[in-house]
Image (cartoon, rainbow, N blue to C red; front, top):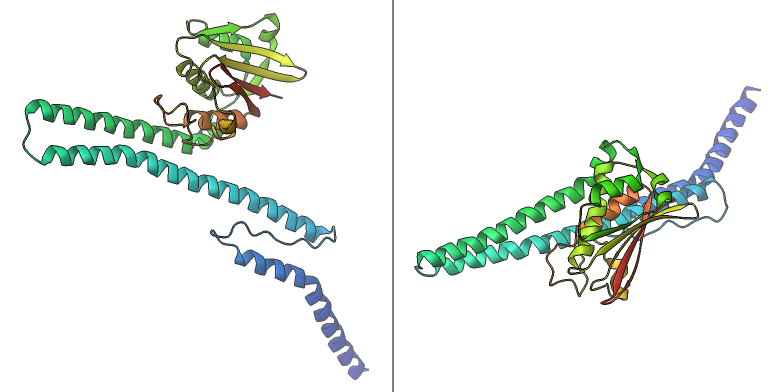
Length: 287
């Protein structure tokens, strides 16, 4: 009996090891694949087993997480590249101005003119740095600031009724439309879009409409300015991106990216329709 018990224990142990290795083999392979993934190969995805079991669900969840990380990593890389490029321009201008000024003795007026140009570029760096900090810290700020129930009709009227460039198209039903958001952040998001509309439409009036469409609450901002090329509409919310026909206007291409981040945080979506040299409409949609 002792010998039988001994051999039974050995048999159970060996059988358990075999089955445990078979069960854990997919997880071990999964761990090996995960260890291969680094910052330079985030495009790798884990292969599914097609067994529709818990392991398959885990692999799908990990792949979705890798998609989000890859997207965030690419966005961060593009942000750093663009920020470096934008900061490099005024720094290069300042260096060039200093080198030219120091090449020989100059008159007081020439030194004053050079210092004024340096001051202009320094202010440009300062504004750009503030915008970059605002864009990078906005998510933390959104989480810290409390939301409130905003009656959009009254809210829009209070903030934009005294602006001669803006025409508010509101009816009685508008005053019942509400949204949950932080008032200050919502104003930043809308003002960025409205300021762009005013900037790119010369002296023409910018129209703001508020209405229901089924269960959707929509704010429409329409200007009759330079418009946006159709092939560039999908890119204008990228940080530092500026449409090809807008580069003669001042700006850094940060405002719309910031607006989209704020509106998305509060469940808003933005759709754009535009025709060159005729109009541009931003539709901000809350479900």
